[in-house]
Image (cartoon, rainbow, N blue to C red):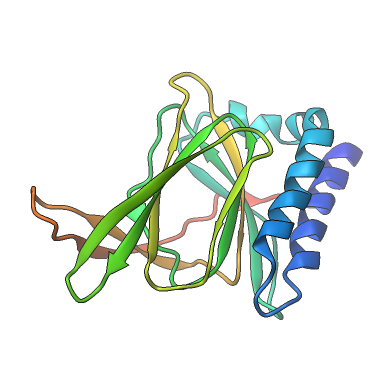
Length: 192
């Protein structure tokens, strides 16, 4: 339990240290997570490996949260081949880092007047890699576990509580998208 507590505390501390500013330097946060994840990958695998074995579908686990300045830190388990719908983050800034496995992140630019979304690129993340987004209303993305066989784990840091967000569906071949409110469901808490 000591190693699990230590690595969870380290992940929490990196997030909290960088999120003390109203607009944190997300590139610097990503570098610090990447350095730590590369140096301590075996410890991360040992501490969080049970989440990869659960096989209960997509799950969000709360690692830490703080009210002032607002921040939440989660670990997500991605079943083989699982993909999220295109979704936003309620205007919050965010960072996603891969703990194990590989993820594809496709980013979209939202145009609320036209009710349209335009794909603006894809990013592929392996262990220790991260991507981030600013707290704007025009960002959305879709994430997918690239493995057909293994559960992936990712770390997510948000500038607040992502309790509600919008998921987008494209009902036909047009550029029109429909926004549907969604609730974030937390499977449990990881403790430091």
